[in-house]
Length: 190
Picture: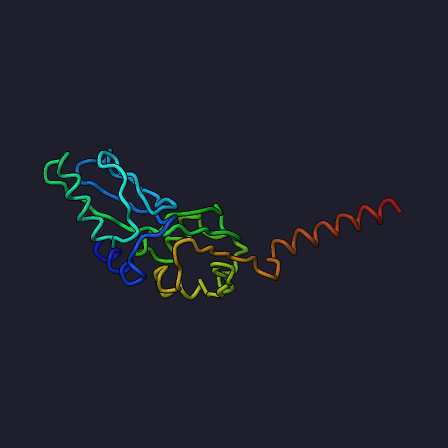
């Protein structure tokens, strides 16, 4: 938890619209949840109500929540984990938008999307951000155990994993088999 707050602080430290915050209130799973920062950078927490989080670091938010929840819970122990909202598209089994902890590794992020398909080209992956495209070798990042922040991912980014250019042997087999069947039918009919 401390590592995620430290990494988030190093990356800018303040919450922005669309960010996801995971708040865990120990011994109170009914109050623990993930919260999305709205367009006005306000988060509505159970019991304590709305809090403007744009000028707060994760540590400051954690301290504020501890004070506010102490009115309702005896000796609350609260952890705040900043999450990135990242879209993972292309050659993955479950393309979509995922909440990723800033301490997650690239492998963890792709695993949340169900892993890659057999046609995925991790070496030529791209990160899209605000109309810009950044090429990144995710194969190398996975092999070296890099975190999402190590490859420069930020909340709101889109990871696109393209398809390999050359077909696999199985694809060639189906193609050649189909051509052979069509040819033999043609020769038989002729």
